[in-house]
Amino acid sequence: MRLGVLDVGSNTVHLVVVDAQRGGPPTPMSNWKTPMRLVEYLDTQGAINKEGIDRLTKGVALAREMADQFQCESMLAFATSAIRSAANGEAVLDHVEKKTGVRLQILSGEDEARLTFLAVRRWFGWSAGRICDLDIGGGSLEISVGDNENPDIACSVNLGAGRLTRDWFETDPPSKKAIADLREYIDETLKDPVKQIKEYGEIDLAVGTSKTFKMLARLTGAAPSSAGLRVERRLTQAGLRQLIAFISRMTAADRAELEGVNVDRSYQIVAGALVAEATMRHLDIDTLKNCPWALREGVIFAHTDVEKAPWSYWTH
Image (tube, rainbow, N blue to C red; front, top):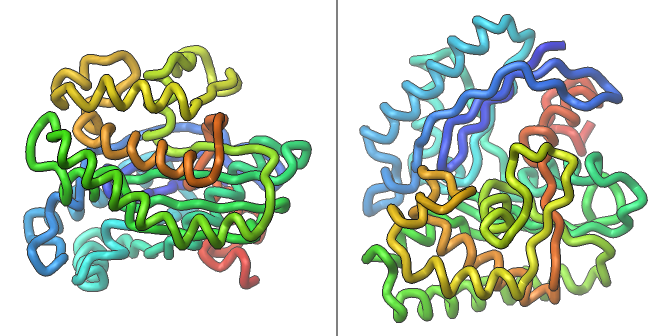
């Protein structure tokens, strides 16, 4: 079946068109995205302002047109942290649906973590043993741990790279004090979820998903995207600490010139690196492997497995 998977995240509106079938990997047919940065359109009450709503609506409309052009049988459209945490999230969804005909499903942070974990498990297989997956988005951090396809624990905290950049950094590059204050905040925020996760025992494989981990691995020496999906890419805690000392002194424009850095995400890579380092440190992870599959692939697998809305994957 041909599916259109529309992912409205904090950073982008991203449409992937795939041919998918139960028991097989998704075959990409088209990949389109447009920058969004929804957290930058939040007003003082935490609501997405008119400019942000209009920008989002335009992006979803363009994605709908592309999905129609590729004759997608189904559109799996969902939104994550930025709309999930917005004070006017439901009103935004209603407006987008009225203008485009697309109803975005808001994923809970836990479901986002669980669906991402499903994709990670499918990529690494059962031989990987007990997996811990970390995923840093624009609005939130998801952590999941388990032996099976459904993790034993899945949690989400508001430690997204875009959100933290907006809330904590007033200068470019950020001041030493701002970085120190943000480190302290991240450490404090991670205390409770890390305590819960550690109660589930040791892990066999630590994994990083999301563009943030991909960029961080590339900046510390991992192979470029052109080397292919199956090339093993790793990120070490020691390498990450050295990287933070380097990129925290650079402007976003200078960071954008570094090989492997996405121009649209260069402004938030410092905050993302701080979250990655703190999470790895608190969970005693020295090295993690990158996984090229993440939330979108998890949504596809959940849909093809049960032939129903993937948001109800664990309640069918």
